[in-house]
Length: 405
Ligand code: HCA
Ligand code: CU
Image (cartoon, rainbow, N blue to C red):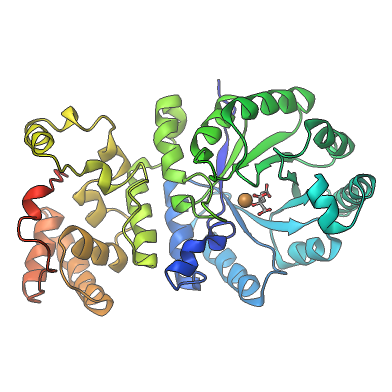
């Protein structure tokens, strides 16, 4: 029996630290985009969200306040909004005053961290202990999670030294692989020992992808008893990021179908597309839940797939929303999706303003024209706009098959 409880989405915290936001000249999500992302994740079934500490910037603080009232207005489910905080009283008290439901605090204790802070191991342990106890006494009800940063380059014995002091005062311990050094064997070993030593505390794991191990480490953590797992859309995060929410869900589907089915899996691909349209990029080819995984190039593959798609498609990607129907008519349909669909799937030259206009007409028509599929309705509308096809090599279309129906 898995103990898994939920994902902690950190797209708006860890995700905004992704170099991709620089590469796409985006730098940070605006309030509207943050709301779209969080709404899509709530619809998918996620109930835990991590934000920057309000100390990070005034924009993040103000956006959080608006997002909080937005979240409460769109969902009657209990949604936990958590602040990612340094182990510093000023940061912590500001986060509590701002109205977070809980605090994810963190501090390093490794040799490298001691050098950065200019503090000894003993001093750091004392600081953590005093801070945690102070906050717990002052706020007996608030949800508290504490993480030793760089948890896989810190000897487990040192982690125990800290966690032994505070296990009675926090709800959850974190085990983050800050630098992406962990291997699945070590993840298994550490989780087993932590779960054994702290049976009363939940465990939240967080894996960076520097070695390409974020996904396998995440699954190993779930298999070995982690209750919470940090993910983000596309796995956005520092450097090469963390585990992608839809990549983990696809694998959770194999690991424990009942748990995976608690999420609205058909919203996975629309969620990936939403981020694609915000960043104005295709969903990465490395994403398990992607159109790429339903695209066939070799002639023999195409012939076979047109007769029976399962010949070269082993995974039930339609269940995860990689269908044109779900993309166009899913509950997430907005101009972003229509824009993405026309540009990336139909290869039409289109700008955002036109996509918004077309979406308005589409939304009106699609509910009335019950006998037509949404794709037909959209194509009829689009014809009136005489959009030009992007210039692609003439035999390109024959060389690519996506049988999405
Ligand atoms: C960092 C922070 C963090 C925090 C994870 C956590 C990490 O960049 O140092 O709070 O558990 O990877 O350690 O993202
Ligand atoms: Cu991280």
